Length: 458
Image (cartoon, rainbow, N blue to C red; front, side, top):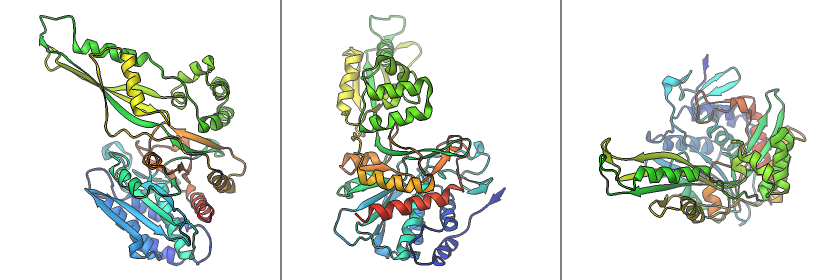
């Protein structure tokens, strides 16, 4: 086992040694930035996000960024980060998105210390190595190299890093509000490429939409009383009936530009019964047989409409008392373009019991999918095919949520265009022994360099 963790000086020296001509950033320097990033435990509650932001600022100022072009804004125990590479025109800027925070990791469960970056067997291990510090490090390295090259984009490029994407997204909302006039956002925390277990590239996912994350609380309240004197109503029973109705309910299937374009390509990749169903649904969203097959598959059910599932239940206050209150959390992943309030109203109709109140989490934010812009598709296709000629580029919609959600909500088209290609068996984001392949670094740097040069010149 070899632990590799060098100070900032090494990364800065490697950048300084690079000749000033157009080329992707140095993979050795980029790897060091990634490992230095992993070594800073940016978990909620530890107050380490500002430290990581300061580290990134040192990397960029060492590459030639003016101090005023890299702004760190504290927000409680976390912070936002904004680095600006000024353009030659007043055209709306391009934003790069990523997040500095990571989910917690219990060291006793890991094979290695999650916050001591380790390079071993061709991988870099550590919490956040995949989510999201790999692509953040690649973006920081690319911005540094562009500055050293003297690159002058037509459109200003602004690297924005949030500090609490994994929790409340308060910093994300602040950034979205401040930069809502941007031309587009390119997110390193979405999309990316899949490598088969045989080592061959299979496809690249261009993420242009996400389902809205929304929680709803079901609540039933009763007067309660002694358990020896049960009456005709019981809060737990009423809640249970409501949950059973929700569990048996399926929202109306839907499709949009992304699923219509992406499903036939995915169908060819996966084949078999599910492949046939995906292709049939893309052609006819009312195909009952296709809907039944897709609905039964957890991998794809989220691609054809809104889903709502109970995730938490709480009720009663004593073993020998009738419950005075029973509540449940319903977690919904809402199809792009569908209003949160419309889903709340539909849940009420499904429950069909006025004694069950349905309350919406005030933090729920809806956003529609972004259009498949020709310039974005062309630039992504060029960057990906330079690495893996001819592989499918699949427009995709994520069932989860990233920072893009809040930028789309304020009208900024946002695209998940991560540079990471990896095997499905190597993906341990949020899990034990998270890792990324070292071999993915050079290609990811070329990917980001190509995207930024092409999209910022328009």
